[in-house]
Image (cartoon, rainbow over all chains, first blue to last red; front, side, top):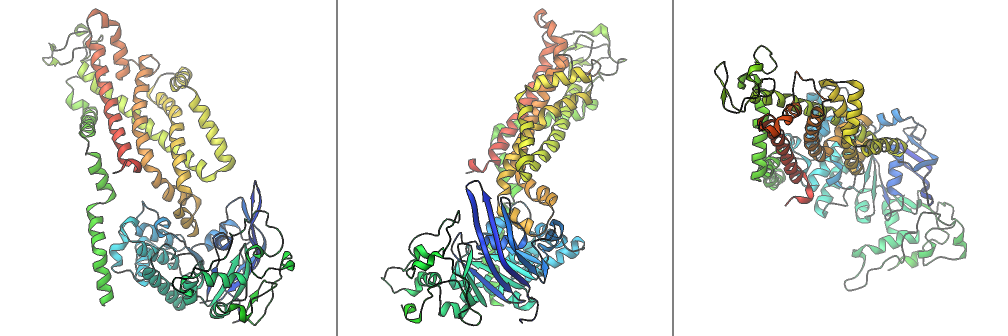
Length: 329
Length: 309
């Protein structure tokens, strides 16, 4: 696995937004890689830079945002310096995206078949009938019953879960190497959520597609991801195999996230929460961005912690990692 | 097997509702809910049919000088012609049957209004879409040109252009398009800016579709509702403007009178009791514009999501 070229390799990616009020460092030195068939969970609060990381990979960061440094390699090919035409070929063909709100990602005035056929024909030389057949098979693959009728429907005639299945079918239709799923189950109810996750997982295993699952929901990644990257204020603060990270969190922020999940609390007990708010990414002072909310913070947290590797496969950015005793509830 | 069956029954009601209420059917039933709109639409259809089949309906070809007799000029409504038919609405100063002249005039008025409206819509909405999609300096430049254009009275620009170009159907169309494209550009831009922010545009870009495709195939169809309303209003405007220009004598040539020209031909006889020469073309123009405007009003109500019950 290690000597193979990973499907996606992101090294030291920095995406900044140059606003009138100052530079917003939305992503600041993010590194991770995803292998074929692997599922990586990108976890963090709103505004931690998860989505911007995703958009940076497909080259769709709109001005005033810009990828300022770092490298993104898709099967060894540099995406940061790729020209617009090449990026357009890659999008939807080698890298596909699934978005959060299935109500919004399908064009409300176009029928499902129109949108799917368009997605197929954007990258493959097929006539309409053949493209339609491909679309029909893709709908069948994501567990949509009677795909022929669904193809003729408008998005508003489908339920939320159905629409997200259609969005997943569109993402998989060109057999991409990598799919970036940006909180795809957040807007759905739990039963549908479980089905969608199952569907995505099966498809990835079958096709060997790498999957980046962006979410704030630890319960989702726990069951789905092979590895987890926890993001805070534009940086990855902790990364590692998902069971390992969830069972033995080392960064106080990860521990706080896990503690905030209601099931970890007893009935009647106050929910444990991380005090304070995510800091503004505008002119973030140097040092650990989490220190103002951290129980372990000490004076050396004023300096930015370097990335360390406490165990094999684990990465951490913290001066005072959690010990086993502190983790006891 | 059971799961498939379950899912099928679960979806059935949605599907049923979907078949009964396609967007178009809902739109049609909403539109004809108002009797005013229904009457206006029927009247508009009558006018359009009258104009389309003018050669079959009208007793006389007012453009054929051999059929027009100066001796029969300014006859009151109901007079008999030498050929034996009745001048239903009387005759004008050149001896033309007014009923025929109005039908032929409607043809010119409607075609000039509709064609220039469509050309202005194509130009204006392309420009507006480009402005909304590009943003930044391109948008600022385009929209300032639009502002500049809209700050002049339409009639003034049209008069200046016609004074330079001279008379003719093509020239008046150029003048109308020049005057009207800016309204379409502004409308489409404001809608497209809202649509551009929506996730489906991002999703379409993520599919690797070209800018042109995203713009015209994904954003434009979502801007159609306000565009349709502006089309109806501006077409009525174009017809009125053309009539005004013809009335002022800078529009169409005397040999092919539009409604405006017919009105202007008769207005010097108004005080001498020969009201019909101006009156009936005026009524025809009024009915045309009012019916289009009423249809446009109802379209606006039906297509406005905020007014939807």
